[in-house]
Length: 258
Image 1: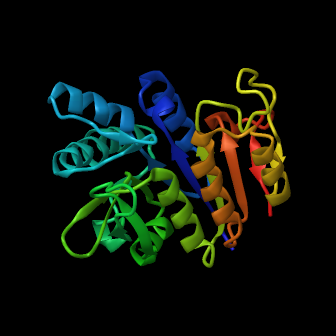
Image 2 (image 1 turned 180 degrees about the vertical axis):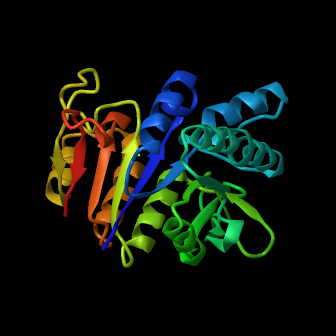
Image 3 (image 1 turned 135 degrees about the vertical axis):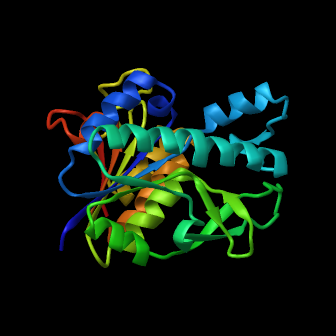
């Protein structure tokens, strides 16, 4: 099977024009089929502040009311997504921007209210790959923002890490899929103050040890849960680290294993 690389980038790249330009130059020359997934929470929060819209966070997660959803849609699917597309086209990388609503590619349901009502936040239920397959076969790169829909006329704010994992799993039957989570650290660290203390390989057993030793912080838990969900569902390769891991053979990063 052909290889498909699914790469998720976060605010450390998106919020830095130099870093974003450099990353997209490298991304453009990846010779396999590829999909890019991005968030943009910091920029959305900045715009909300400018518009005097209160942003409510619970345990680091954004509560998405109607006003917040409007801002997220403008920032994620608009400004950030189209800026990325423009830079990719500059680098001769044919690309098209997506939310989950476009082509009915990613269907979610509104998160059920338990202890907290997160508002218009989506939990993914289905990924439709048919249109994306046509684009990939034609050499076109899909670029996904962190928005899905519920097939009932509602957009939903959806975790970008989860979108990347769901896409990788959906394509695992068609491609040899590789999933890369790019963020500001070299990988999972034994010491958060030492970028060289990278745990190079983590399997389920090692993960439990790191949890018991309280090495892994709360912010890393959802990312690692998405990693293990992907590797347990036929994704061939899952890595966490700085974006250099994709093209620099000497870069340090963490690989997730079964």
